[in-house]
Each structure stands twice: as structure tokens, then as C-alpha cells.
Length: 135
Image (cartoon, rainbow, N blue to C red; front, side):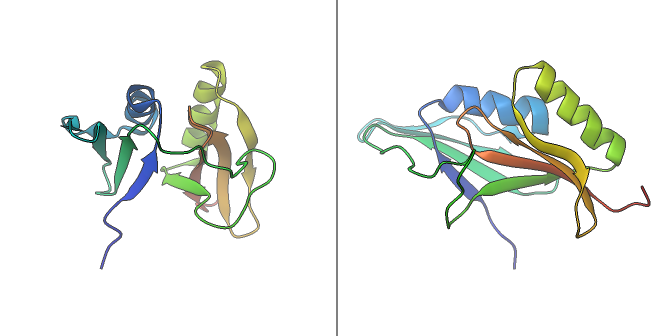
């Protein structure tokens, strides 16, 4: 069994698509639009086969979860694994230069990962991580 996809509601469909395409090599589907209910979405497919659905539709309320300072129960982050510590550092630098806040790291975790946490354009937490490879 595999996790088929994760979905995110957004008011910034194109901006979110561009973020995950540019920084995480997501390959977007053709935009789907349902004119009746004004629903639009993209599926982004990543090299691993994992997929992220980003969706927009009028009337969806804002998320009350403060992902920056006070996390709450429920889904809280997406994690992208890359090959090396150097790539983690490079990605953190690239995102910081482009104006994305780095919440923590890069640093080694107690469970053997090297990672940092950032926010996408909608303030969803995103971890970029690599497994312990002898660093």
C-alpha cells in the first residue's frame, strides 16, 4: 500500500504550484477546473511518485492552525528527502536568499536526520531532510 496523495487548500493556486515546481521539482498536471463550483486544482508529481494536490475554491475558511509558533494536532508538515547534507544546506540557502523564512536548522536531529524547516507561500511547514550518511 502507498500513500496516494496529500491535498492542500489555497487561495494562491499558481504561486503554490510554482513554489513546489521550482524548489522541489514537482511536475504539475494540467489545471483542472470545475466551473459549476469554481473548484480548481493541480496534482504535482514528484520523482519518488508521491503526489501533492493543491486546490482552490471560494468559501473555504482559513486554517486556524498557527504553523509558525504554536503547532496544533493534525497534519503539520510535508517532508522532502534529498541525498546529502550539502544539498540540505544548499536548499536552505537558496530558499533564504529567495525570501523564505527558515524556521530552524539546518541541524542534526536526535533521530539521525539532518534537516531544516521552512514555510511555503501559504505558511505550510515544509521540512527538507536527509538520512544520516556519516556526517
